Length: 254
Image 1 (cartoon, helix red, strand yellow):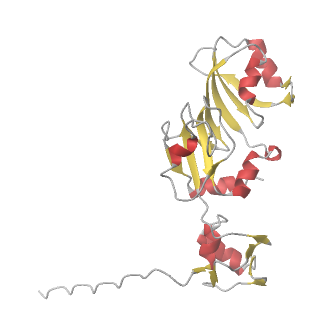
Image 2 (image 1 turned 60 degrees about the vertical axis):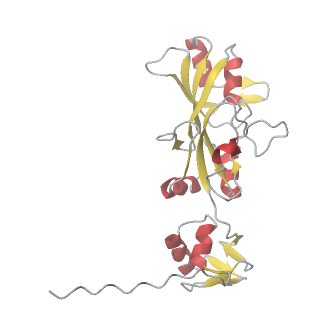
Image 3 (image 1 turned 135 degrees about the vertical axis):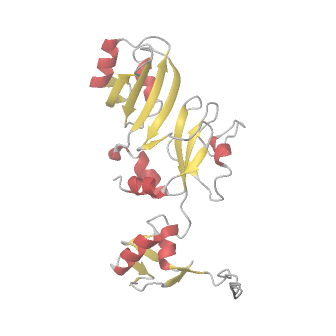
């Protein structure tokens, strides 16, 4: 039997040092969509480079070109989206002059990009916290008009009375105005000190203040869902990058 010919070694792929990038990759790095989807938009005439519509596949752009998608200027900075299951005793800020531990320590190894938290969780509140460098998406997820929903697991210092649960469900008024709750219920299989609450308000300390209004103290507060994202397979103190499916869902908001 004749010996098989060994395959010729493939030449190493050289890094592109020209400072240029394919247009579809540029768009994908900007966090608009995938490269394949970008090709469709390019063909449709949705992209301009330096004021001119470009529909050519494989078109190369440099970092100082002005690229617009549907008239909006975009940047080639790669967008990153990191989801953290926040533990207690970390504050939600990018730095702290008092030297306290911040959530940025927990995602330090996630990426070299400079990220910032979307919204905030109190120091003693645990659960889901999203980080990104996509300012446009972050603005949509935190703007009241989009009504992004959050679900919390609440543990109180005493049993929540049924009439108080019903009042919260109908909507209450705090010192800074009315608050609407999307849903509230006792946690199945737990004591009546534990409730689940779904809310879209972004007001400061809103969940704690709702229960304080009726004379309860929140002893534990955990955000279990944010904008449809969940803590599934994400242990406390750990992070993960969002999937393309999750990103597609978030981009549909608004």
